Image (cartoon, rainbow, N blue to C red; front, side):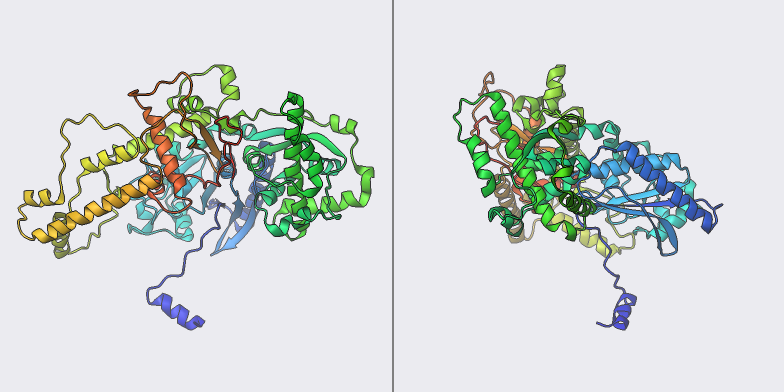
Length: 624
């Protein structure tokens, strides 16, 4: 198709495909809307904001490790607009995205004329967070370019910004409307509180996201990590996403390895919790050159001391980290990642200087946090911890420091449960989810269409009470205290409306609905969402994008001190367990749990699999 034909096609009513972000990316645009600024003054102000933003990022997240890309800004000109623009790939660390939102919000407080738009590959994720309280007219089909951060507040462009029509706004239209009608924007404290809910834990949460661990690695690698600690992120990604080609030098025991297992030292390495979970739980065959070292520890008797067990764990973790750096070094020059390229340059410098530049044992002992090793209890969760978090029960200080999660995890879990229960009790929600009455109907429809719609409503009826009862049963909730639940069928509903003819059609419709119900029940049973015999089993936490919890599918043995029988089932625990098991059973595909959570504005991270409970302690861990 040539250019002329393509242009003619667009003129005939076709529109070009909308530009979309790659997966797990967040994009942000910063506009200075000050009518008193000349073009030269605007560029000066934008550069001032850019420098301030970079300084704020360094001051706030000095020791933070970005999963893939860091916060970045460049001046951009497009469609007659001049603004600051940035895109960050946050990978599996959803906290990177929220840290960026926190920085942007801080900037809008510092610069009163600054307006910020931020969105990701899922669209307006701030509005998704506030899905329960946004106006009904603001549907995902028209919410583009309508949410802006200004002076620390979230403001929405009203429906009138598009000349009263229900359509998405272009960026140029949105900026023009803000310039002309800033007083007409919607500023709702309820929407803002929901949208910025996750920002309440910043900046204190930045330190809580980090994890220090002692590992045993070659001295040369310890030296490089000391000078470039952020290089741990691309190295673990290379290890986590390894392929046979990347593993070939390690498997073949190549003599040209950059980090052979020689001259090993034990150092404290800083991870994010996401990175540590990714490398800690990975199953990894021991490379040939490491077998004599790691195997010798594994082959010892079971009567090894606690200190020897710690040394074995540090050596195994160090083997994985070293292997990741080995794979990174082989492809550092061709990587798009800035940290990977900088690591390749540093590696060349260290190898040119030889062993003269390597630190001694005394130097390593003098490094900051040289012996720091954080507790790994946050990786493991048992039933009692899980239930306490859902119920919000008070625990003593020691349990809060060493047990599962913290107040942030507790709030996230309880929010999932409360949103689902609110959804079930939402009188405005039908069998297709929340209904937008003013968005789903065409005001120009004819009377004939209305009549045909009424006929269709008569032909197929829907009993909301029965649907509510069925959903509660599927999600493991006890039935509501209803004395008389109608068991209306399409056939009986037709009789009530005086439709006495067409019995064959009635029976056919009833049979179709029965088949649909049976298929839905079979699918939910297959995914494990109808398992109502909940027992106090072990649970695990998956902290890939968000700290979301899934249940152990273990042997079902009851914990000591717990009673079986007709004991009342924990509603919150039962609901969360069934929701998460059903979502996991979808294996990344569409399914009932994902659809239901999507209706409520909830987004769960992808489950990368799980390790089996090899040690028999009933606890599950992160990872594949």
